[in-house]
Each structure stands twice: as C-alpha cells, then as structure tokens.
Image (cartoon, rainbow, N blue to C red):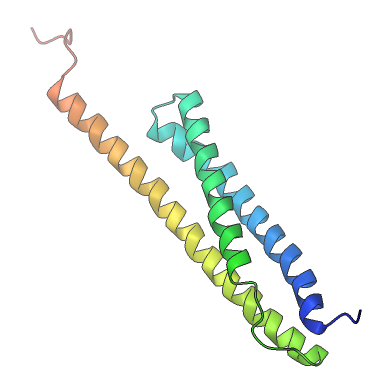
Length: 134
C-alpha cells in the first residue's frame, strides 16, 4: 500500500491541533481559577469544579471541531501542496481556537461582573446591622 500525501497530512495535522488545543486549554484554565474563585466568592470546591467542567467542554468542543474540519477534500500530489494545505488547515484552526479563547475570557469576565453586581445589590438590600450609628 502506497502512503499518500493526504494520509501524511492527517498524521501531521492531528498531533499539531491536539497539542495546540492542550496548550491553550492549559494556559486558559490554569489562570481562570482566580476568576472562578472570585465569581464564587472564595468557595474553592465549586469554583474548581466549575472550572474543570468549562475545561472539559473546551476540549470536547475544540477537538471535535478539529476532527470535523480535518478532511482534505482533494488529492494532494506533492509536498508543496501538502505544506500549503496544512498551513490553511492549521492556520484556520488556530484562528478558531483564538476566538474560542477570547469567548471563554468574555464568559469569565461576564461571570465576574454579574457576581460583583449581585454582591453589591445584596449589600444594599441587606445593610450590615450593628454599625455604630448613635
């Protein structure tokens, strides 16, 4: 059986998108623990659990997308075409991954803002009694 350039392309594409996804997820969710603790007001268990669920969803969504767009729709005949096709595939996936990174950051900042708004509202509605107003 002769190995085609298409098959070689798949062998190159898959490890790159898997490592790229892992790297982005690792950096994002290592640093998002602080946001989650702030959102959940220091409740570490629920903050880390929620962070892990977000991370799992991030992997499933992004690796699923990488596999979905993996197919090369035409036969590749030489190494130049292989490099060009891989650059298009990996470049497109990198742009998608960047968009997903910023979307997750938006969700973290939005969650933090909503959490702070609720805390301020609760503080206004339930002022601390026992302050010295004599």
